[in-house]
Length: 386
Image 1 (spheres, rainbow, N blue to C red):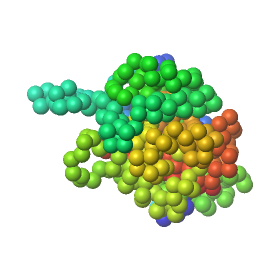
Image 2 (cartoon, one colour):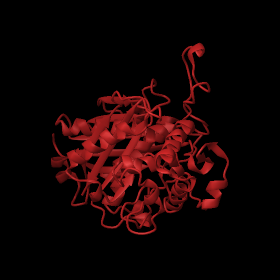
Image 3 (cartoon, one colour):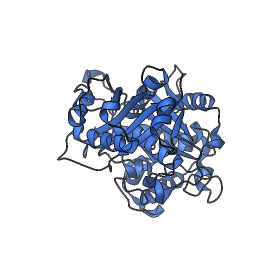
């Protein structure tokens, strides 16, 4: 496999754009990435587009109708919350394999105020277990994961609330974030309970967004980068759930991340101590906490202590292991198809000291990781280095 680099990135501010179409949102991010890379659409040889809610509508081709049709192969990807990051991986593999020298990945979604996701949905209602044997609604699923961590390790509601406080504070420094307001611990603790232990401020918002990346081979990088620092894709991993014994938490939100993390560190030839920043899938505050352990940022049962720390090894900006300095899904927003590419953009900006991250820059970052899971299941982890 060849070395692959991210030559350019583009992202629109996450929010709500009822006057725009999905291809318009995706096209805007694609044009920003092309400009950042210093190439034109005619230079791109392959395009992977991630979108979930219009996955049967050839969104990739419709984006090219906005920015330029050149006859290149287009792959449309749908993989739950890992949709965008899976599209990025398809673009990465197309270059790493030697088939193409320049590829583009776009993740885009238009969700507006869609509300609660998950639940029974489809099938024969006679066989639906929703509300009878637990719940498949996402706040409930990740609430259950939080409760199990509390049962097993004595984690407190305050630990999850502190994650929300941290992420909202980070978002105040990110102009691409859907929400840029700080919240206090009391605000989070006293907010409306959605699914214990997740209160309203511990739940990510729905919305619209798009992000894009241009990937190139090492030879193309030498031709096109003009001496600019560019991030290398040191590992690209995609996993799904293996068979496991029944556990207290179903669906299992941890096993596929742990497997992906192990593979990613091995492929990159580094460990969690070498990671300068992590953008992980914090659809809920409980998810972020359990993923601290799943990604090896702290030991099993130590996530509460990790978020409690106010110096050294802690996940806040300025700590040794900053997590979701973008504001994460909790504040940046979670337009499903866009999230995976947006997470990668954030990591790239820190590694290359891009002005788009200047107000929240992690200094001297040499390696970072972007993580997304989609229940069903899929998990992607991309480690990038400079």
